[in-house]
Length: 195
Image 1 (cartoon, rainbow, N blue to C red):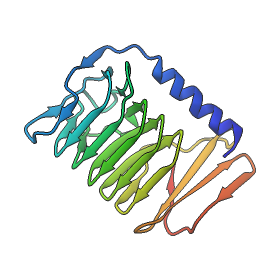
Image 2: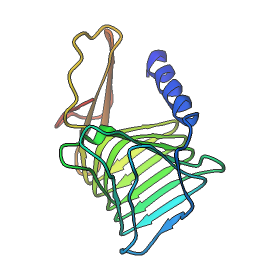
Image 3: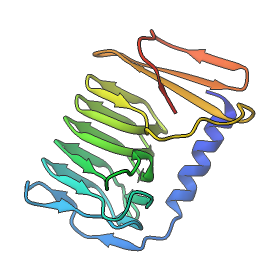
């Protein structure tokens, strides 16, 4: 990974960590199917860990709104989801939702949407991940589907731009990072998702 890409991630992670919360949620466990989280287009915060089991995050607002969901604003905060579904307003891009997680993120059999910046590892098993996964440790995706943000415009110039191509087979994910003229590739390539 290039020093520029790492610096950009660290800057974004720090900037999001410092974003002032406008909505604070006290419930940390959403384990009943009847419970859902309905964040507004704002900075939505959880003080520590949050767990979702067979529920939905139903973003409120319009297609052009943005949501920031922060986990671990006052203590160690991990995000865990099993059977979690993230729903967006009609026409909204997965990249309109940003998740800042102080610690690790684990998703199992979930339909996750958004740009996820984690302070530790990201692990997904089966399900769908629509968006971006960026972490200070390993990003491991096993099975399931990986989809880019959708309506992202291609950069007009590659100067100073980063493009990530993610490739996924049933159990293997490949990350290809291109910055300027430097290209690093690991694994095999079967299908590309542009970021």
